[in-house]
Amino acid sequence: MLPDSRCGGKFKDCFFIFQRMFIPLDLLRYQNQLRTQRNAGKLMVWGQVRRRWLISTPEEIVRQLVVLFLVEDRGYPIGLIQVEKEIKAHGVSRRFDVLCYNNEAQPILLVECKAPSIELDIQTAEQISNYNFALQVDYLLMTNGPKACCWHVDPTRAISFLKEVPLYKSS
Image (cartoon, rainbow, N blue to C red; front, side):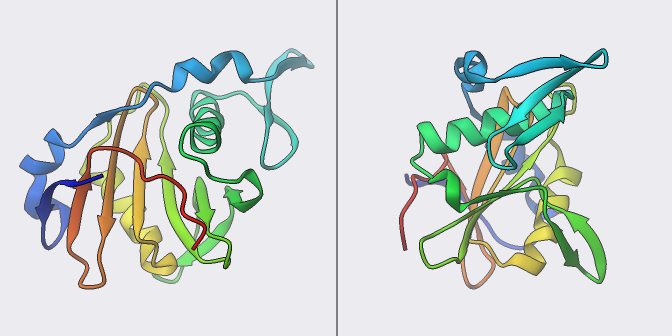
């Protein structure tokens, strides 16, 4: 997992690099593992982490597929994943999409999910970066399903774009 490119400073300072850093995620290979049902005329999807039925929106489907990808492909234990929890970022209450922890309860990967119809752009990158201001996670991933961008933020806050989502490491 070598960095594809480095970019110091803010995302807007390296937009040209950002646009080339998309990596494909084959999330659709997990779609047959999603449990769905109809309830009062609404399509529902089973949330593996929250262990309850959720309204099936395009973003929720991406979120559930990302969880399956992280567990089955990258080795993250489902018991160390949180979904849609509230945090305070810059004094404002926000909800992150997915947060993965190591065995020592330290957050290691923050994920921002968008519906497939939503383009990943600088605003999305700034959104997840703002969440990370509160969480201080080393790895960030944003995805709309077909496309994703993953990067590492080192202690000096330098950004290294990655060619793949990092495998789980217990500590």
